[in-house]
Amino acid sequence: MAKELKFVMLLDCYGDLLTDHQRSIMEMYYCEDLSLAEIGQPLEITRQAVRSIIKRTEEILLNYEEKLGFALRLGKMRECFGRIESAAERITDEDIKNEITNDIKKVRELL
Image 1 (tube, rainbow, N blue to C red):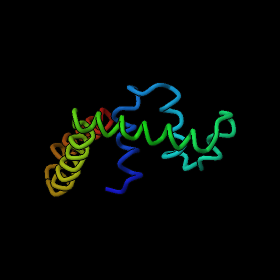
Image 2 (image 1 turned 90 degrees about the vertical axis):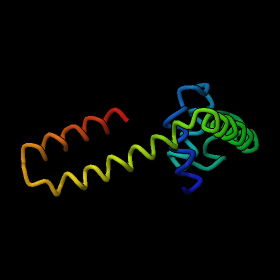
Image 3 (image 1 turned 30 degrees about the horizontal axis):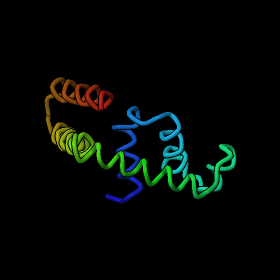
Image 4 (image 1 turned 90 degrees about the horizontal axis):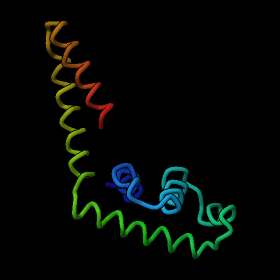
């Protein structure tokens, strides 16, 4: 998994466990693709301070994932539902096919 995608997934899983400041900086860096300077300027902190916060927060997120493993399980569940959805496309009974497809959509919304 690409490093950037990994931290986006970890933010998705554990972002609510971070402080607002940590989460905001991580989202600006990983989701909005802002540079360290672009993040630091409006917050009136240096590039080095932004980098330090990002590195510490990455370690926090990795620690959560190591202990809880939610992001890994979430990824595996998404893969499974993708395979189920592909298999459902081959079902010839339209009622059953639609029921399965609708249930998969509902579950994906919950993930």
